[in-house]
Amino acid sequence: MIRVELQKLVLRPRVWLSVALLCGLPIVVAVFLATTKIAPPPGQGGAFLSAVLANGSLYPAAALALVLPVFLPLAVAVIAGDSIAGEASTGTLRYLLARPVGRTKLLTAKLIAVAVFVVGAVVLVVITGLITGVSLFGGSAEAVGQPGGVTSLSGASLGPVDVVLRLLGAVGYIVLSMVGFGAIALFLSTLTDSALGAALGAIAVLVTSSVLEALEAATVIKPYLPTHYWLSWIDFFRDPILWRNIDNGVLLQLVYIGLFFAAAWANFATKDVTS
Amino acid sequence: MITTQALTKRYGSVLAVDSVSLNVREGDRYGFLGPNGSGKTTLVRMLLGLVFPTSGTMEVLGQPMPARASAVLPQVGSLIEGPAAYPYLSGRRNLALIDAVGLREGRRARQARIAEVLDQVGLGGIDDRPVKNYSLGMRQRLGLAAALLRRPKLLVLDEPTNGLDPQGIHEIRDLLVALNEGGTTVFLSSHLLSEVEQLCTRVGIVDRGRLVLEDTLASLRAPTGRVVVESPDAEKIIGMLNGQVVSHAGEEVIVTHADPAELNAWLVGEGVRVSAITAQRLSLEQVVLAATGPGADRVASSEVVV
Image 1: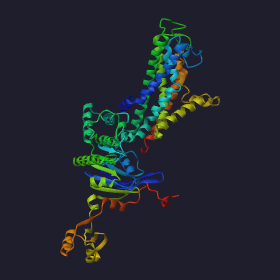
Image 2: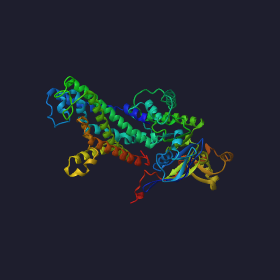
Image 3: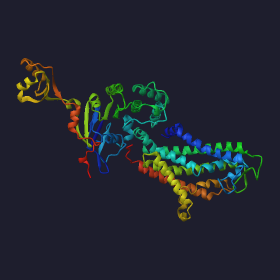
């Protein structure tokens, strides 16, 4: 079943369109930065953006910082929201289940397909970010230390192996964060036969969480918001790595995945399929 | 093949299927008839494990459903409320995907089988354009192909000829008869009387969720004990057989009589010209109309419950 889901993912034009959009945004930003040479001052604008003019090999991280808060979750909401509701609205859900496919198996395959989509999208963003960054800003491998070299956010310089390891850690963390969000969308997808409805529901969760995040009065619940630790992947680029928020974020996302996958299962396993 | 005992499905306050006890035997071509909204589709969905019954039990291929769905359903081919396919993929690719679900088999064997079912439903020469460009009839054929993929022992088909032209309907009917003669039991749910009349050997009629009639088509359409006579001398016949005439209209007279051949010989002996004479049989339409009320899609003002 997982192989079938992955085939559907790869063969679907919409998936490639969303990946292209994800990769396109950082390219557009890079072109503007490279032609104007106006970098946002440190501390403002997207993370890493102030540093990329000096060193293009940091651009993959900047690209991730650009797509993560909105663009990537939107794509995840669309893909994961479509997973059950989309099958229901094309009518293929009834044929899958009558084949038969176990309902738990179907849900699992769908969540794995979402994870694979995120991995693929993030990796492609990193690769296009690297190519764009190095070709537009130059990768100053010869320069070590400031400015130039790959500099951590804390100011110390990092070796290439270190950068790769940190980037891998960051990618893994982002994927986990997105799968946590995808689990919410998957649950919503089992509630309705409208893929659009499920995706919009997931986006509503995203917006609500972001609004509460910015609200002083909501301080008490902030650590439990799904988006709260999303940007903590940046901590992989501090020296030493700041593990506290990363650990909390991993734990929180695992709880979200467990909770919403269980809810999706509880709803879907005994649901009358009338689509 | 399919037996249900007091199978009931309730959606909130609506009783969709009400204590239905169905019996489909091996080798049947079973026609499941009923007005729109009478619970046909809900019953079909219960048989396939898509909808869970509120009460009652059912067995498909001799095993309880939905408990043994994983053993039963691989041997069942189905077409439920119209075909469905991934619109952005070709028909062949769609079949490959749906076939790959839960089946371990070599790629070559699978491709051969896909080619075989496409041939069976008349799509053997199909190219690689995506299903979204298919006509309604082609989609219907593709849906049938998907139902036939695993050489099922039981075919559960809901309106299988929907969207097909008369030529296509005839073709599919021949295919279903051939499959049935090869040992496949066919359960066909439809509101198209002509389809059932021409294809099925047994009929179940459902009305407002209840099974009101289940019998062989032959006995439903047995002679009624009346004879329909057409004659230019209709007035003469009415005079001669006064007590036995049930009704008459123009040249047609309906007479209570057991044997049309004997009646014919007698009328001719009496010098009456007979242009046509036959035993009266109810059409399936008359049987269904007598057994069922109006469909649930008809909401007359007096029936509206406030």
